[in-house]
Image (cartoon, rainbow, N blue to C red; front, top):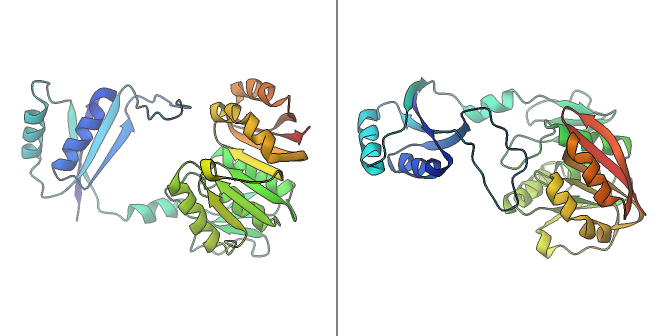
Length: 292
């Protein structure tokens, strides 16, 4: 069955209301989209900012009475006018399958591969992680994750305990265990990320090597390796906590940092870590060093 895609131009102040109204009007799904190519790199903690010009898109069945939907929207928005809108037909597709078809096996370093379910690993004898696109961030496609995976491939944590702080999909914790770590702790503020990490660990047969925890509940003695692929702001605020979690002479790997943020982040860490820039991909950098 084909679908109809109704898109309305909104402001940050009206986007949430339009989303709710489209749901009430029977939209099967509602998404928000940047309408002006405005990047949002690093919002303050606890905020969910929107673009200055936001497109709110509702997906409706092909037999939906769109004029009636628009009339209802206009009535509920009054006295404000109905925003500019346009309507497009959308062919029926398995969108998840289409997305996964574009997600190909990827190699990181010399030994490590990320392979989506259904693909035969290109190098069966390599270290292969099975991972599909999902709700939690982290499939290896983003430069910040890719740099951490390359670092792990070059510095296999054989027999070490590892912390993956901001674990997302669990990709770094899983890679660490596949590369020989004896245990990895996945820590994240998002319960959905903890669920994704647990499920992906089971899929890769390393669930006995990995546990997951919210930051407030996390207790650990210092470990030889901590990985944190977050953002520069949170990384800077976590210096005292990471100093407690990494043992003397232990390693720390930090990613999620834009190139222009590298210097201030390194300055924050210098008192506790001998740290330096070790990789750059596109506009992102990866820092690594030892606990003093």
